[in-house]
Image: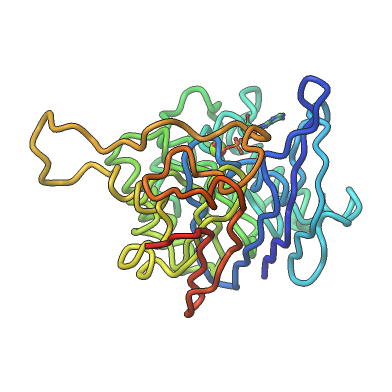
Length: 319
Ligand SMILES: Nc1ncnc2c1ncn2[C@@H]1O[C@H](COP(=O)(O)OP(=O)(O)O)[C@@H](O)[C@H]1O
Ligand SMILES: [Mg+2]
């Protein structure tokens, strides 16, 4: 359904071109949930934004490669065609719902607007669907809620409204960028449950962006691990947890707080941080933080190698 092929994203930064995403390829089948995993700054969000070309004009983003959706390259699509796809065939949910909800319009109007743009339904039918959807995502007293403004809702309620808005047109693909990161743990679990149920009902494919291995384990069938703008590992969820091959994936697993950890015990945080785009001149981009690094790692970029069964890793010395 979705095939990202050697995607490169360049920005102009202080007169220099930098590429926070540099040759990323992965695909997503229909009815599949794929996780895009990596620390902050790895290029997950800009990858997601490029699918619908949602960059602000001022960022002067330059995109190359291909993003095929049902066989059609979205990078080559006309703006007009893309407007027809956005919200209808591909919908997106962000970490902070207030970035997509308009504070000046009532909840009901905002949802109705989606259906007005993308369907020829009559007013009454639109209102009925909006109400039904708000109820479906677990919002009590939906009939009153339609007349309220986003600021009067809690974070969890706003995220439910966002999910309702995203699923209103039954999109084939839902892109979720850290959908639960800003929420309390209990609310987070409720929202993940809701997403799972809705996915089953609507048979939507989901690209789930997260830095949280727990969310990946709960939700995904396959995982793409990104590091500094590249795919470093890709596999089924079972394989990733059973046999993580890249030292970065290993480090992410070790950095998770254990359930039975002694209170106050230090976390195995990964030392250092993700290099800024364009700062690693040669070799593997994880070298500076990698305990297994040898000379070749500093000199030559390892290729993405096939370990079998769809498990791929970019490392000279994988586990
Ligand atoms: N509009 C922009 N102009 C220049 N650099 C950007 C822009 N947007 C993002 N970046 C850079 O791209 C890199 C990846 O960012 P992002 O995709 O937000 O990472 P993630 O979502 O994985 O945390 C970061 O180094 C960020 O500073
Ligand atoms: Mg992000």
